[in-house]
Amino acid sequence: MPLKVLIIGAGIGGPALAYTLRRLNPDHNITVIDRYPELRTTGQQVDLRGQGISTMRNLGLLDKVKEIGVEEEGIAIVDTHGKTKATFRKSETGTGKQSFTSEYEFMRGDLVKLLHDASLKDYGGKTSKDGGVHYEFNKSVTALTQDAAGVDITFSDGTTGRYDLVVGADGQWSKTRKLLLGAPASAAAFHSLNLICAYYTMPRAPGDDALMKMYVAPGGRGLTTRMGCTPTTTQAYLGMRADPEALAVRCGAPFVRLPPEKQKEILAEELRDAGWQTDRFVRGMRDAADFYAHEIGQVRIDGAFAKGRVALLGDAGYCPSAMTGMGTTLALLGAYVLAGEIAKRGDGDVEGAVRGYESTLRPYVDEIQKISPGVTNLFFPTTRVGIFAMHTVLGLIETFRIDKLIMWLTPEDKGGLAIPEYPEIRFEEKDGEKR
Image (cartoon, rainbow, N blue to C red; front, side):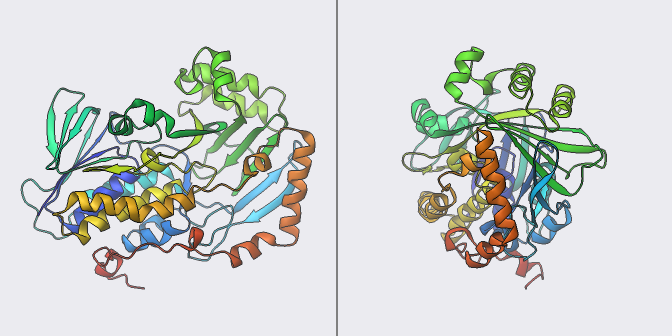
């Protein structure tokens, strides 16, 4: 039985789910909406790790992902003079075992476009006149109510609709989460890691190469360059430790709600005299048209992230934070599991599929969201002594190849959890790419 599905958010998880559901049943009527006026094909570098590699292989898209990959050879930790203190090269296992740099690195916008285009492709099914995937932009949801038979939606343009399944894939600050759980519970689900990060591109300079370069200054401030964009630009990452509440008092409003120009002013002041290439970063930031800043944290819901016929997907329901390096992987895995649970029940038991999605994915969410104690202190030390200790520890890890030992000893998929098997979702075999 074809389903009428609404997916809120056209980032990574939303189009991945639309693609998978369409391949399972071309007659599903799938609408993907996004509050932005067009598909956002911008953004910084993301990667695949652990279960994400197996997921994309089953979805039949791993080879396509390889085609959009960027050449990043690893990461170099540098001091204020630009001297390298430790270097870690990327892994090339072809599996889930990755070093600090994954062999599956690509630009966020390229992955979004890949998934968007794949979701619209005809895979040989006899699609009904109402079937297929449809994207609508500059549109959001203002009200959501559900009963045992469906979900009623009111949109920002005043129109309404009723759906068999609604999926909120609208990011860390998800409005769908707020509508599903209520404002207090939705706000309480976000747990700050007391880190503010900003991303943008700046002109490429001599010395920028295929190694990601990371510099940490006293005060818990960090500067990073990455190369995966265009031949003339370099990705710039700024990070600083900050108490969000104290920063909000100082700024008169939460940092994430300030206009970009005000955010730039605050970051420029915080980075003053940080060392290394600070002046270059600040100049680039002031001129950047693609500047984006946000607060790093995790979304951990006290209860279920899927209820009735409404499911939260990716960062909206279980953001693991950039500190885990697993956000993209978890969003893709979530789309795969939700589609798999629907396929397993033959489309007819949506509420059962949503419950199965929650119970099946929960162990992966709990495992992936684990952050080792002291990780923030290790990578964002506040004192010169702490920075010296970080350089020393990382130097020893490189010298004695401890990172290689850890990679060899640890399971390929985080926590040793292999992805669930859904026979219906073995698209690489259907496409003649059986390995």
